[in-house]
Image (cartoon, helix red, strand yellow):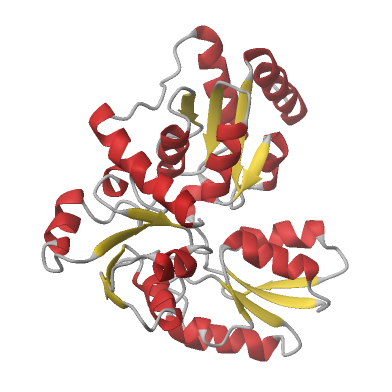
Length: 309
């Protein structure tokens, strides 16, 4: 049985020998992030991976992130560190449900949050990230927008795009949206000198209390650059620990202790070692998407890049 030090050394050796680039989402644990070549939020990972010279990518995150990496790098081999890691928000609607909803608004543009499956992206007109959603929706020629799937992010976009009419579904992140106004107020009361930084997947009444609303990467950059010394972090609780490590002179507090994504917690160092070993043996399961799905789903992402995502 290997020690943790030996396990880390084997992972580093195998990824170098096999030419594998490891991508890790910011919500991953510190031991996973230490093994990664590229870290960041979901779309940044895929964009950086597309620029990597590596032809093999190992994704530590959830399935839609691996799918997005495949869409942007179709010529590369994509592997999931833990295939059981899904995303309740990304998977809560089917393409058929979205098409049925679109039929109610025939002149609308279907705008899909990047946190969706490739199958959903394939029936959308354009993709957005939480940081680019407002800018891209403003640039669309259509007045009516079917925004999927997150109604909280959609409400945030609507508030910042009053000239548009957004049609929202009752979908979203079950962990961000579960945080209550009372919990946010309690965090502010407990830490009165701290700035509240909130992800737009939270409910509107929670976001309305915030000093800053933005994507995970935006929250982290704001906290690092701010002259303030205390912050309440309104996104996945792992970001509190990451920021505390990067900015030891500052104090970080969770908005709610239960703001935890279990799917992001299932990936372990043993998973990286197992997949890398399987790649070496030629038995690893590569992520493959149907060809008829890849072209329209890729177009959805290309439109996001064209419009400024």
